[in-house]
Image (cartoon, rainbow, N blue to C red; front, side, top):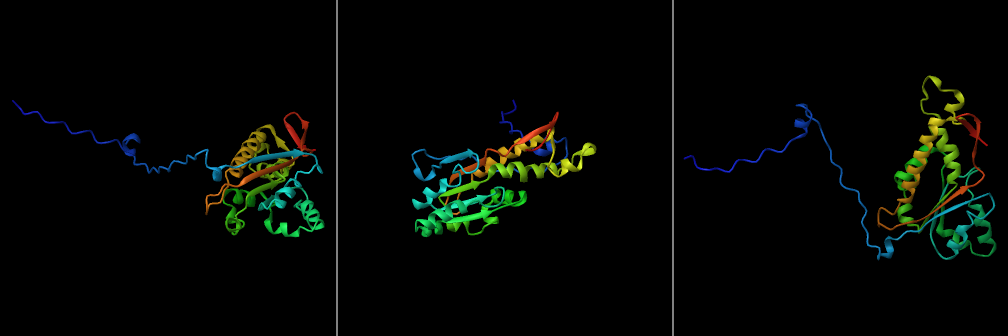
Length: 226
């Protein structure tokens, strides 16, 4: 009788086996799950969205934050440039110009720079992690979406039906709006996830958008800025 021997386990399948004999290079990314205890106050972040017409006090919201000693970084992308003058003057008038030492304005007027900031703020302002803000205030998100983001989508190749207006972002077709919607969500998601990469500190987020910035339909499936 032949003595019983334990069969050898089959060799694990490789990428080559699954590719029909063609070797395939595969890279496995580390998991990116975020795990935190809800009892840890240092990991809790407040997110506030301010939406309304011009002059209703969206930017002025930061006035009280600065008076309370919070450090604020403004990410300005509004029409006409930065709107932080809305808080500079009032703070100086009450003799609290010292509060402005806790405020830094980062004005961004193009899509590529904004994308770089959302990927890594230090690539645009290297000192941001050392400044260590408590609040990151994106002032003028609506303008970014309706101008910079739409221009970026409009400049993408539109195929044989592409027009000069479409490529400039002044006129978008129905298929473009799905790209605008998707990129809007992606940018918001990146913004909400920003934090101090040196210390791990979570930044509170404030986002403002101008209610009057909107588009109107000029023809079925087509629109321009109102």
